[in-house]
Length: 309
Image (cartoon, rainbow, N blue to C red; front, side, top):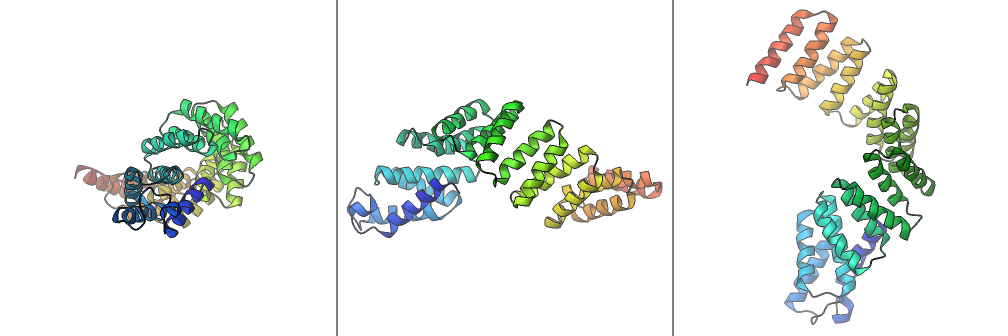
């Protein structure tokens, strides 16, 4: 959680806890009126809840026009965070716009708006916001990391690497920056450096599943099938019903010539997803490669039957 979000939440909770008169709550109506009691409940729900219920409470509190500027700032900040958590970046940006009118020098809000714009695919605007955040706070590791993400997606790998390097220099314990730089190295076909960065994120214990996933791809691209199997096996241990992971491991087993193990994985996949014809086609290919044509034909027939339903 960003420190500003934490402060906004604490601010509203303290306001709710201390409402005994007009000045304590920052309200513009007399204490203990029905309107203030309802608005106070909305403050509490906005600060302590989650999802659409809390968004609605934040909105009612904002629309009530009962609160002073400091409380309104907290309300907009919290609502933006709630929108962000549900992936509604357009509405989050609208709240960030309001927050920047409150304080045009808030580096955190620029960084968050930049991240939201990047999530929407507007990398140019994202870079502008993140650059402003960095101008306001040159030691803002998060902003460097996010700007690196925008630049990487635009294909500007040199500048992206500079941003990731700076993010890691400023915060060497941030696993996200190592994951993102590792992904950039993979996209640049430098798999050894990719694996080193992804391994560092795993060592830090941050974003481990994502790092294992990307490292499995990097190891496979590098030709390290055993390493890819190890990473995929760990991912499957963490998420044993993930059919896509099981399929990926089965395909790697097949590429290694370990057809029995591939068939084991494809069979597990079928048990988890028995009505998907593609699962049977994968196993049919493995049976055929192994030379068992009868079972290959049986699986293809089952696949055809399911696909025609």
